[in-house]
Length: 299
Image 1: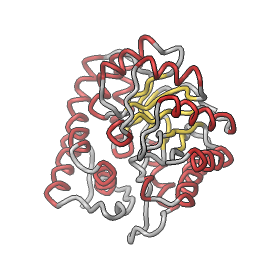
Image 2: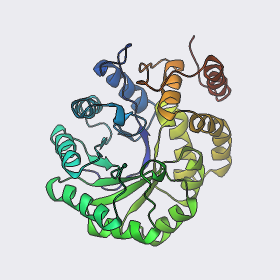
Image 3: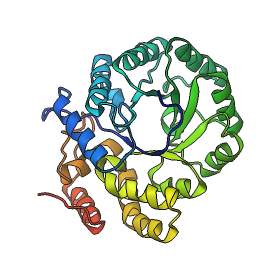
Image 4: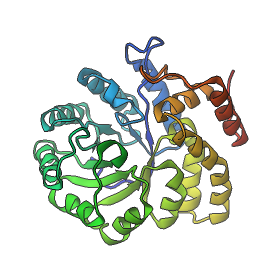
């Protein structure tokens, strides 16, 4: 069980068969081997990068289980189990726990935005029945929920939430949580283009979709900046990585990640409709960015 994270954790895709109808279990093994061999420190399936809203509950369980099995204990697996209701969140969370997940990432209900007291009750209800640490998935653009630094601290004190992935992009709030509420909750960056800033700040971990495509570059950045304090080397790496991150954030994220995976030789199938494949010119742009970063691409 992992309640405190270090290093880079890859936000993982859900590979599909060519027609998009079924999860490609063998494809999950390929993703895991690619990511771990690149030096990345953990796996986070079942989030936005994994297209979780496009999956049935059964598919979400199967994908989380397949990632746990493929990881084989080599790195922690943080299974995405957030849902619109507390009951379904508990169901998915209990299944992930039974499968051997190390922690859970739970997005708050994202249609009717709950009050903060309801959020506290929601996460407490999950932690009452699941003996795993919970990572709060902070993505206000999807949930409409904006927490203050003080509320993040309270979330950590009063529930089973031990960390949060910040995909909000408010670096001022992130900084306040990191410095003022670290005893209550660990702040993990989840906004690609703020990765350098977060690691330079002193964040000990981040959840990063680009790490699924370019795991070695991402791991090298973490080593240079967070471990070796080699700012010069870190800046050189970031100059290669940042344009890729800007591209990923400029398109449908899961689709852009899957395009990148195909380009580097670890295809994961299509995104599910209504999301369409990237236009040829955008695919070619991403290829150029990868090659400029020293990453080999295929046809």
